[in-house]
Amino acid sequence: MTRKTTTVRLPEELADQVEVVARGRGVSVNAVVVDALVAEVEKVRADKMFMDHLRRITERDKEILDRLAE
Image 1: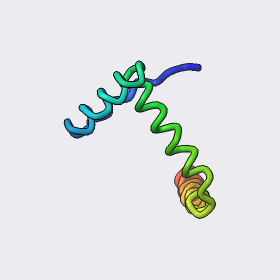
Image 2: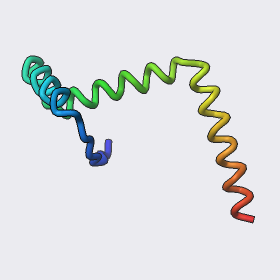
Image 3: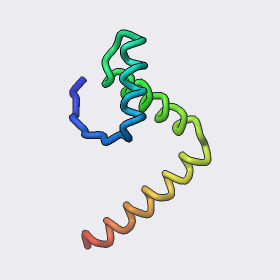
Image 4: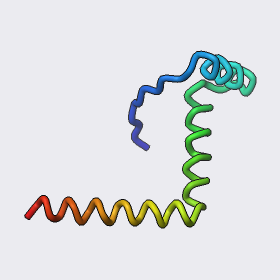
């Protein structure tokens, strides 16, 4: 799997807490952040209302892009 680097700015207290969790688990801060993001994506994918909303937004964006391309 390819990787993409992204910078995330966290409040200092949250960053400190994530570092403690990572040390406690014996993993990197990156692993904790990736796990949290995977869990969030899984949560929203299971949310039918959110996914319907997202489909409507992307369909509208596609229509706008198609008009711009004319």
